[in-house]
Image (cartoon, rainbow, N blue to C red; front, side, top):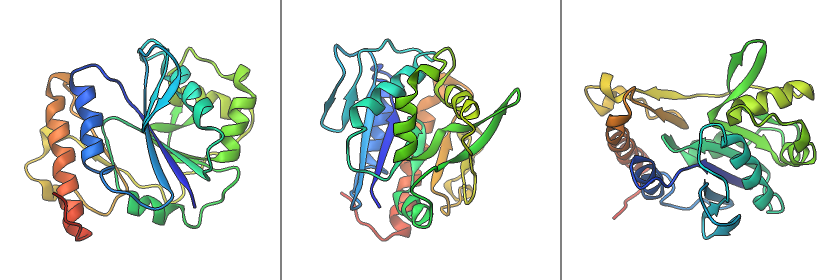
Length: 228
């Protein structure tokens, strides 16, 4: 099983830059065989891959997240992988549990995540969703059917609905962390593969970053992994 992680990122020189640097230092700081991570950004001079970063010549904006995702897919579509796991800046991922989750999942026609609803359209939450490689190829082959006027998860939801593609939330787990309501780290279960960390105030996003570090510390204890 080969997995590519795509992390929706933004290099703003502020807390979003701190987020992806923290992700590199925490859940993505060690390797698992056949797992690879790419962080993708807009506001770059050209579309290209630089190390584990995907640079895109797209203006950063909430509306442009759909275009960013599609252009990132175009750069990695020919890589050898079975699944894409798309996550975002303020998420902590447990790669060991992701591996366990995917071990019995189909390698074709697979679209999975926390399912939300907009009007009558179901979509998988952009904080963390899964797609098999054939779905990636199908999206790119039918790019003309994507409405780029919506954020990425909604755009994909409308696309999947148009093409009658099935979404599943089987075995999906997510722990929603709100740092302003926490008193200690032990309120957070270590049994999940995805932690969505979000304060309601953008001025306090550094709190989210500190929580990400604390979750990682607890995870490393659980897996008995020593890190410098």
